[in-house]
Length: 213
Image 1: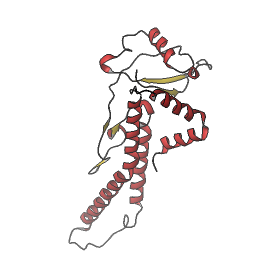
Image 2: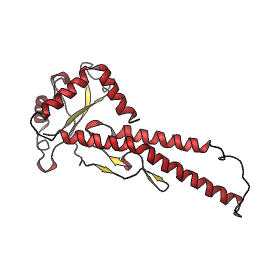
Image 3: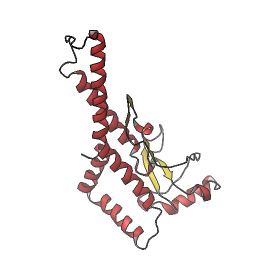
Image 4: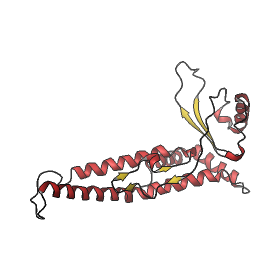
C-alpha cells in the first residue's frame, strides 16, 4: 500500500533506445515495510503488478535506498535577516515532486526583491545627515531597515503559494492511504482525465511549475 510515483530520468549513455529510465518513489509504513526484505527479482515482480500497462514492464532496478518521510515547515521563510530557501524552509512529500519547484520560486522572488531594492531611489548617492549620526552609520541604518522591510514583504508575498503547495502535497500523499469506498475509483478517474485532456494537463503542469498567482 501507499503512493508510488515515477519521475522520468534521461537515458544512460549507450542504453537501449527502446527502454526508458525513471526514479521510483514508493511510500510504505516504516513499521511494516513489505519492500525491504525482498530481493531485486521479487521487487520487479511486485512492481509489474503495481504499475499501469502504459508504463511498460520493469526490467531492471538499482539498489534500494530508504528515507524517513514527514511534513516539516517553518512558519515563515524569513527570520530577521535569515531567509530559508527550499528544504531549509519545508520538506514536502516527494510524491508530487514539488519541493524543487517551490524552492526555485522562493529564490526567484528573493532575488527580484533584492534587485528592486538595489535600484530603488536612495540606494545610491549621499544624503545629508539629520540625526547627528555619522553619515555612514545613518546610511547603514537606513539600508538595514529597507532590507528588513523587503524580506518581510517577501515572506508575505510567498505565503499563499507556499502554504497552498504544502497543503495540496500533504493532502495528495495522505489520500493514497485512505480506503473509503469509491475513493480509489474517483482518484483513478481524476488522474485518467488529467492525462487524457491535454489543455487541462498543460494548465495543471503550469500551475505546478509557476505556482499560485
